[in-house]
Image (cartoon, rainbow, N blue to C red):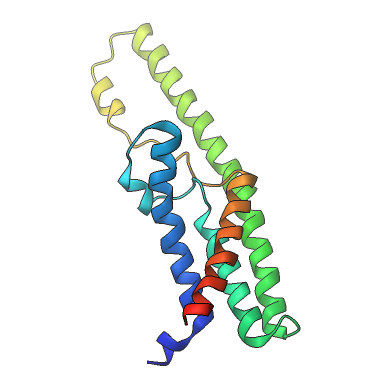
Length: 157
């Protein structure tokens, strides 16, 4: 029962759900594609990682104060998570795009070079996931949505 009363945790989990669900209408508005699977996927606008850690840090700031040690730890943790989302994970996604293209090009070259009987098996291989990280704007709006959501939930809590 105490878990339900943990405001920073509730704020963070709510921010994750909000950020994941709002990706669907944003994608629909921007690209006119309805993709409900985005709610269970990584990457995209806004960053649910950024929303979660921002809501968590904001919730801790509201409950324990911004001068608390726990707020400091959470703030540093949030910065690392957001940096990782826009840096390392984004670059991993860029690498996946390049590797997938290299594999497609190589398969085309081999297929054209000789009659390859097992081409179908290679075409069924699973590609690397390309949407891993976030653009800085996605991280920014994720963190803003987390902060706003934490304040809104605190007023309802």
